Image (cartoon, rainbow, N blue to C red; front, side, top):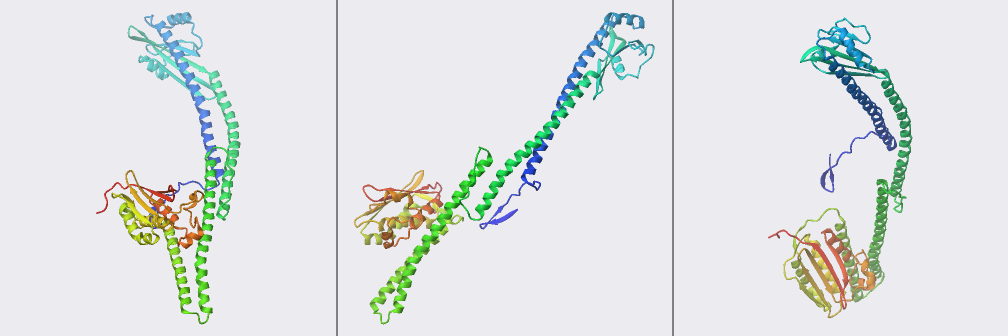
Length: 486
């Protein structure tokens, strides 16, 4: 889905489908589903593994016994009841439920149960047919809580000729009962584990949702405008991280709100002073009869100065509003050296009036990617301040250097800035010397505009004392590595 945001069309991703309901219920359902799956594996895998192990053991035992009997009978020329009985008496095979032996025609010549002697069992026992084809055969069936039913058949060969077949059958109820007992105990254990899982999932989801509810309640408090709200964090999980991020967010909101209120207060104060002056002067003109022309002109001149101050303040507030905008400015390659030279030419009349020497040290073009108006404003504000707050006979030097970064330096030999004021000079409406700043026409917004404009273009600004006196401002920008516009 595409939506318009800040003049641009962006795609909003849809949330993954999730059944509606409380988080607690959703966590419980997921936990129980996982538990059921785990218990299902627990109830089936051990039983299957045990059953397969029993079957493998029986296959080894029955096929080995069948092979022994077949090997003993292979010394006979043919199989009949008499010679087979003699061999079986010697072998004395035990542990097998039933044994019968057939000749090459499928007639039974030996049966431990005595039921099939003389009978032809061809077709009645599939394993016999396979063994009479010369194969060793084994089968086993497991009936839960009844028995293992296993059979094995082996051919009796003499010189490559089939003379009969051996058939063994075994019924084992004891091992089937053992596996059934294991499964019953597993079912009982699973039921107990399921109850424990339900209790644990309820306790876990309650603890988890309690923290989420606390966070939701704190969010609602913040939505109501209380930015001092904090939540208690403990542990080292993701919810703790979320709580710490929430506390950091409220701290930022609180500081932002304090800054906003301070900004509104300072702006109101700055606007109120010239407005009060205009109102007072206007009332004086209106209420004084026969005011002489010189006094009237003086009052009108003061009104004009107050109006100019209001205009400058309004323009700076508009600049700050533009810099605060989320819309990025149009950026083009800007020659920082050429911009510095232009700025110094514009301020040369003011420097001459203040008896300040301007020097530009920018020997080669240094390009950055930025907005031309923003760079001009940075240069103008820094250089104008360096001239205004200088002393007769002082100097201002603007230096531009290139390389991995572009560096703009404005150094003056003026009155300087006290150490305790350096951390605050980029704050809005902050003045080092309020009285002198107003006399010079300052609003306390120039350096804030410089700092915001530099940051908007990926730059940074630093300030330090200039020895033996004065101040140095240094602005660093990322260097532009492309080709400048013709």
